[in-house]
Length: 469
Image 1 (cartoon, rainbow, N blue to C red):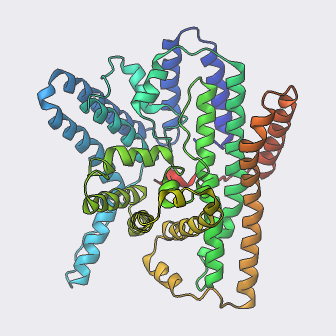
Image 2 (cartoon, rainbow, N blue to C red; image 1 turned 135 degrees about the horizontal axis):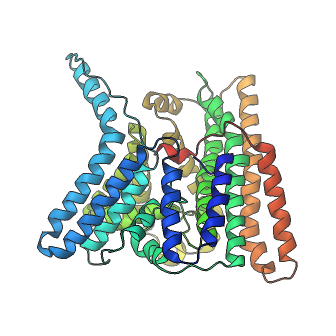
């Protein structure tokens, strides 16, 4: 079940009606646990075995750490082995076999080994990271293990953010699960508006531009300009798709009395590589920072230590996105960007670096680097990336230039709602939120978004991009 299916609307209506009709938090949490199980196991019920297996493992490991503090490191290793072992099998086993077979073939050693055709459970990368943060925080002494298994299960399986995040920390989400929640009309309405905006971005922007991007990327001999235009289109698509999912998730959670962390902070307004990762997929980038980059040495050591930590964290975060070498290359590309930026700016005075007058130049430059990274991210075939690098962007036939112009026109059209959304959020809403006519303005905006989603609704709606990760 996905957020943009008709079945989900009925599911949500039933859940909200029952949820706010319950007088006790305990009953509400029981309903959330059942609803999350129905949501996640709707198509493949066996997914629940993996979800609850990870949850039970870390719940018991957390209590074992409290009972046996001298064995905390061993118990943490058990949690890591269980979660990463499960993630490794379902996500990387076939990738490993493919590469072993390819390596043996290159040496002239032919083998009968073949991939197993393992099916990747949706959301496994997200909930394993979420449950691992629970045991890591207990190991560090930053969190107490929870006694109430029901509350813990709600934290692990909370359906609005279960499949594609945000990756919530136990220290942030669990206290919300454990406290009483009262219905507030203004908060509920805010959640409705946020969820509708997310659905609008997914259905009217991401799903509209996606066929144009796919068409060019599947062209056997595209021109350099076509690939550049399609890459810009994909940058718009992935932002609308992934931030759309997150906005729906945050809106649904808000309707249920929860507040999830903001996952996207206008990432294409970033002025440098570090700024980009403070704005893009924030819940994941901060997870990588706190649980990978800092333990690897972070920026506390010398330049070599920082270099190793940067490349280690970014390459592994790239591999987290998928079992393909292009994701490793994408992670390395961003590590090189961060490292290069640090090397260049270390010689520039802080007063110059922080001068806002440079932003009109640095933002487009960073967006160009980001798009180059998205091309690496989007194209899973390394040989095609090599081919794209050989193309001259100024050379092309008449048909290729027409295709390029069409792609750019569609990109501009699809980017317009995102730009308007940025303007409304940062400049309009703060000025009119306390005005008496804010309510009719907001409901009119809802009506336009609902009409747009109705017009662009497809029976075969495309899955969210991050479902594959």
